[in-house]
Amino acid sequence: QTPIFTGGRLAEYDWEQINEFYKTTPALKEIYQRFKDTRFVLNIIDNVSEVHSALISTIAEEKPDERTFIQSDALIIMKAIKDEKPMWVYGTSYPDIMRLLSFDSLYILPATQFMGDVFVAPFKVMKRPAFNDNVIAEMRRRQKKVFLGPLESEDELKKAKELQGYKC
Image (cartoon, rainbow, N blue to C red; front, side, top):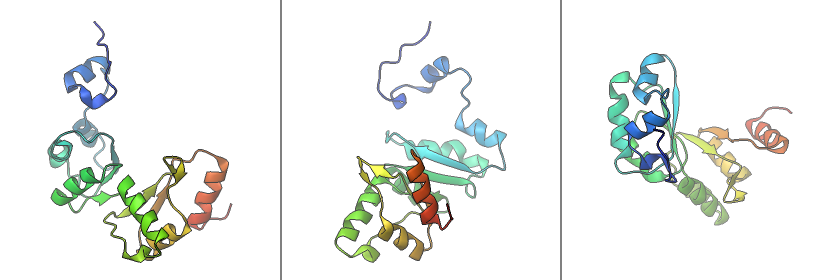
């Protein structure tokens, strides 16, 4: 019998139900074991209870320190993981993006707290620009890597190349 998934989020189901429907989906631990020399970007979508503890305990034995990049729209998730695993690499949450833009509008962008290691931003958040030239310049001043995307048009590709210092 095929389970009927009626909830809006995958996190609303336990692993057995998910595995019953997606029989070939490997567990995260299996992926880390299979690709021992690979770096991973873990984009944590849902802010479910104790997701940080579950993630850390799942891959703790797989030597994730030098090959794990944590990205999430939820700042609380990244802060919780960073408290326990400060040596992992961390991206940018939506609250980070909003804070940077707000401080820029007040002309005090250099005073903004940013705890990420890498600036990761889509081109738009809630149909508004997620960054501007000042934010990118500030991230460069702080010697942060900048990842822009996902790209949805040729114009966005051109702008991303421009900001990264490439010629179109």
